[in-house]
Length: 223
Ligand code: C5P
Image (cartoon, rainbow, N blue to C red; front, side, top):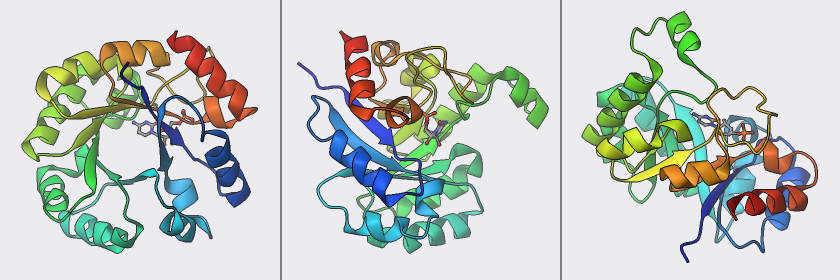
């Protein structure tokens, strides 16, 4: 049977907490990757910890969003961490996406479409004229043009994105119950995989509280 793939979002500044997350997600029957984002990577010990991490699938969720030269320089600056995946906002523009992809080497470049914490109302507040679905589809075509390796969207858009973008689709916005926190476009793990997500990204529903119990609930949801 195909193994489901899960990125655990390691959002904390505490090394003790990170070690606990790694330890308690070791022996589970899923393909596991670890996503480190702005919180951990900007913390005092975050960078060194990731640098020493061996034999794990790692995801540097830097969400670069800047001019091409700065994105390229930032990617070069973290090359020594050997991330398997690194993110850039698709709204950085085609030139920045292409420039980053060109120097990425073995690191997969992941284009982030509309954040899962946004909905149509948030988009019109920002000033976008397109509705959410059209904007995500449009951005997926940008990811394809730049030959990126993966895209981040919500599980709700996976079917539409898949028509355009044939590589990996990674979906945060995963919830098992009504506790959605700041996320707006959410689905359960089962729904996300059914829609065709290659990887789901789960943070708080796993890392807050009892990690082993939370994982068990997640796996139960898949059956
Ligand atoms: O705790 P939760 O499951 O909401 O965590 C989701 C993770 O995915 C966070 O680390 C967040 O930064 C990241 N993310 C997201 N939406 C995106 C891209 C990344 O929630 N569009």
